[in-house]
Image: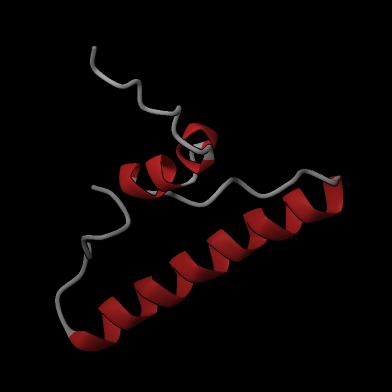
Amino acid sequence: MGLRRSRYDGVQKTHFQHVLTAVAINLVRIDAWLLGKSPGSTYQSPLALLAAHPLLHQSPPPLQEAC
């Protein structure tokens, strides 16, 4: 079912599920921290990856004159 869909009907039960899900995620993060695992990398859009590409920061080659 996934974490984005609520299994329950009603605001209180849905809120309770959200709280339990957040607790579970935080427990996984604490476990990883205690074991010394580095957190996963954050998502970067393809445009951000392209903007950070090293070839884009080089000066263009000089233009050759036509004969």
